[in-house]
Length: 545
Image (cartoon, rainbow, N blue to C red):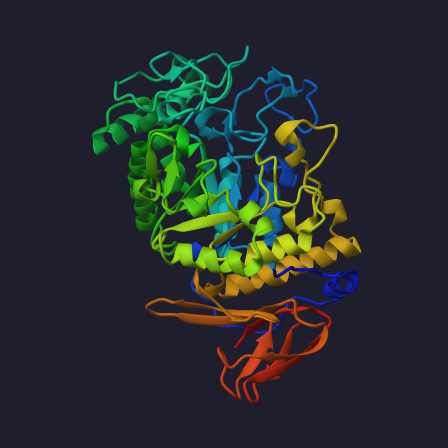
């Protein structure tokens, strides 16, 4: 069994090594190998304290259940500072930034506001707590200038909860019962996820008028006529019926056509009829084309990215999610990739060669042409890989070197606490980013570890999208090979090597006379008799030509 470990000496020494200065050939961006950073917009960085309170959201909340000031400007600030670039991040996924319900809900877990973004009141407007349209435009512009894609988060399944300030929409728009009992396809889809979370009638093709709540809201904001004009143009151009789902999909696609976002992470996918996502894909693709034609200088990818949250889907299920009475292939229903809920436990229970080899075989076998997004922790998974942050180096190594795309959840790289005795439920996972720890030696060392692995992944699509092959079992070395029509990339990685001077057999990847760089220690070595010698205090090498 291959066990990853990093001792205290390595942690301290790691912090002393600066980002590699070696220039490598710029690799093409490949979604299947992306290094995606997921953050809760309200919990990452406060770039504008003037927008911290809106709609009189001032009631005392449960622990980690109110707005805490993070915003779009704060994310842009960190992009400008180079935080994401140094981490090798090439895509940022923001939690939903649309206008949230103005009130809150009184639950057993404590009073809660919609800081997380999943309680939408108005898809056509940004919540002022998160920022303005100008803030979003700047974020996307700055991100693209730094070779970083932007993913927003799409919620089609439900509106926000009903409160005194947020009336329920009419029954031709939403259902308020029955509540889902999760026994079969029907009881996952045609129901409300939880109590007081109105379920959009995504199955309906009946034409409906705008909810009177939105009509009154837009009238008071002076934009009713414009919104109606745009809706009329959309329905006239597409021929879609004025059914609830098409209104929402049109509103979400506007952020593609107007701002040039690169993709959506889609929420609660398995709770919506799968055919809806094919429709969403087409609408987003059309909007993506509209933006590209209007902005020919913008270097966007060829395809719009959709990754889905099919809660409980895992790579071991291949292309399908099994409801018990029905299996659905969501890859065949519009999605580029799905979030892989298997990773946290396969990374914990399997030895590392089984993990890497199995994932490579799946991605290049059953899932060929599709992809998965691996994670070790998230905003709503109460059983992360390392809740107590006791195996942070191991977590980073497995996540960032595993086949598939990687999702860093904000604070994975800094050991942000995921346990809080005062918080209840998913609030434990949603504390503010621990910027105050970043300059501590231990945190700095961990962050540097993530940075080196992240940069190596970013520079080499073979890490995430390439074919895995073990070279030697002890010490554990392997190679990854990625080939496209215009680009070939091959790297070699060694784990659990000896610290200090180490001789590594590299003939399977590098020819004699080749100058090889170890991106982890930032040392070069020349291949002689099929071997190189590296003298570093680490038990890991990341080898590139």
